[in-house]
Length: 348
Image 1: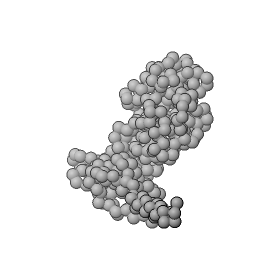
Image 2: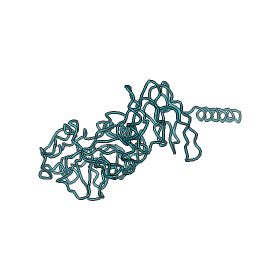
Image 3: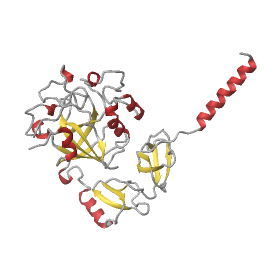
Image 4: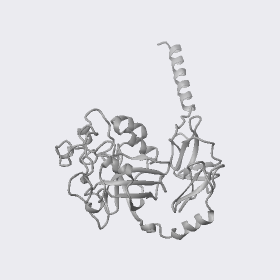
């Protein structure tokens, strides 16, 4: 290469690098676009707009741009909050964001931790405030709730509540063969212990609305045992991180000797295969499961999991906002039929 050609080549490389640095990427629908510590895209791809959810999380949604300006100074973010868009939060215990909704939406009381902008008639602000005030001082015991912690996992092993005789239930938790869909006998040994029984692929979380999801979990509850919690359902309201005030209703299908008191280990694909790692046996091939504990680290990693369980992995980064072991306020609730349909297990 001559010196003239070399100069031309260098100039082209510099131009391309300059161009790539100047074209800022945009975030797609449902993806994060702001929040404390967020270093990714801060604008949304057209026609989506960046909607403030809380100080940790803003998300690309459909609708009109929210009239709020965000100024970041290091790790501190201060928000000049305007109105909240449809589906966004507008009130609740500890809520410091906008308390009015952008027209034509109105702020509807959901529970003491969460009010949301929806269509319909506005609820009396006095009533909502009074309801919140009555229990604001003791949220951990409100309505029979207790404080708890969460972690995440997806080890593909047969669930503990899938064995007969664990609790008074209609039948043990449904267990599947290697394909993840065909039911096997409840006495079949776990694939994590040399057998052929694995977690069914449809026992992964999914969203019902922007503030409610259903899913499954392993659990250990203080003063109880598997006879109490196998196939029981619990309402988990998150009390920390980007999902604060969102609710996840889980059916308990499993337990673990490494779980502490009031500890829910949430089942989500790509959440970490743990010590036993049945996933490498259930899904042989060149899949990337991430860290043993914690799993994959970013949304794009979900594409490297088996197709049948990718949806639950994307749920973690979309609805669950990649929250890292958030704390909860929980209580036992009746099981939604949608959860029972997937496990075929209901308490008697």
